[in-house]
Image 1: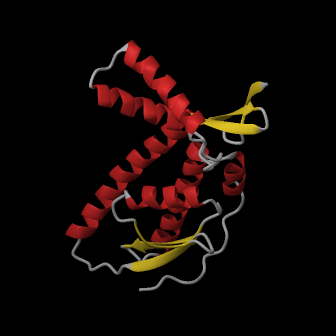
Image 2 (image 1 turned 90 degrees about the vertical axis):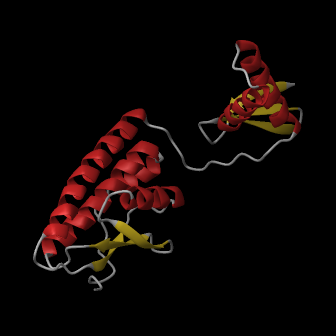
Length: 201
């Protein structure tokens, strides 16, 4: 007797065959289907259907354990994150350009920003998103305490340091609402933890 049921991950299904179990991972099936069509060199309905059938057969013949990476795709959250990053890139580029052409020297510092999420995926995605914005390079990530260390250009102004911390935490919240689980979203809704220490010049 065989039956199909949802697995822990929203992107995988489990097929129970007798006493055994086979996992049908939808992203893996999609990826194998793409590879099948690339190997044939032509995109057609026949190749597409055959690619799906071959991908399912491979997943059933060579079963893999179900792994939940903690990734959820939330379209509205992804749009909000994209819009925020575009705005942040533009405003940060203008600010960095003004600092470059200013006569007064600026003093940089490294600022510790503890994050609220404990997921490796959220930690990595937040660090990558922050590093893509001009003037906000992540130079270290401390996984044990979920802390990122941010290079801030205008460290003479305490308001700029607080603004940098708020920007990182806002990015973390948007990343969690775009790709995180319900637990990740609940974590980023909590008050921000205290930083580990004062900025280091």
